Length: 410
Image (tube, rainbow, N blue to C red; front, top):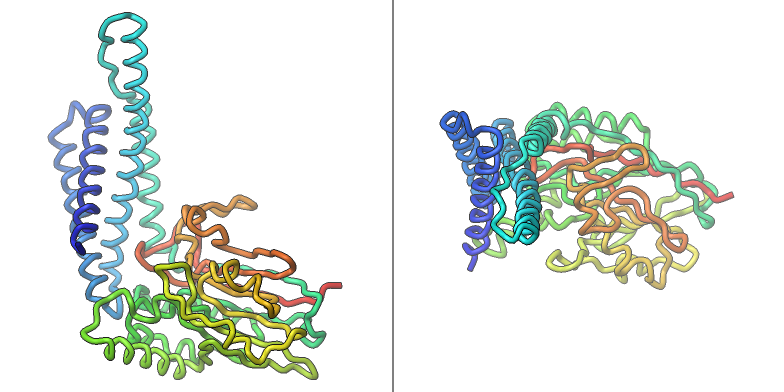
């Protein structure tokens, strides 16, 4: 049964390959079939090789990815996406041609003439797909290191006065094993430090699977400084559940190594608990839960334990990796959580953000997929992610460093 999804996946890829091949050949390359076929087969071979390498790499759970492998992954991924789009456009055109043929047949009471593909339609589809292909590969080489700072000022009625103007830096979903240039990651951390935050929080998915992914970055994170400390939680990938382990003990040992490496980074891991942050005569609480998401994601988060020492008047900032936790559990929880900080979605690492226009395919799975949300005076911020996984790049949805500035509501 484990092979069935893989077989279906490759059958889907091959059907996309055939459909886009014949669609382009019929409309644009009918006079150069040999050269076109040779070029197209080369792209197909590169795509299949890249996908196979991606499968084997994911199964092996390597601690790091090389620059060359990420480039190959990106090229293969881009070919799959653009051919999927082209074949979808050709399918729409074929449906239209079929209806047009049927209409002409009914009107003329005889078989209509063959309706050929539109040259202009195919040319536009090819140009659009080509631009997208180059864009996706730009995202692999440059986009994933195009770190952006998003600053939000959030007002609360019950914020203690001493914390008016308190700055929280949030990064999430580092997925350290998929970075291929440590110097560029350092630039991202330098940009974070330049914001002079009061506190730094990491909201899960430090690694893809293996604790050793953190090793090249331990000193980088250790050198990040904030006067009120650095805190972290576990995300779904941090449990190492997406690669095979010889024994359950080996998997648990990997989690313990990750926790130890995070301790060496100077991070305070919050596993269903909270810590008081004291400034002057006032106190707020940073609470953190283990991953809690809708199935099949793990549901280890325990709000009862995390907020056991919290009273009704306390101001609480909750770190919870998966944003679905907010609506499913946090919003209606008896104890008030003023602000929840999450990640997990990555904004799908591709989309459009221009002015007030914000779109990504991930919105069809997660309603609260990026930025700030409010309901009943309670807030959720969903970080777009610092790293990447799967598609080894970013296009339009750039890696994010969040600064949340707490303010008293006047």
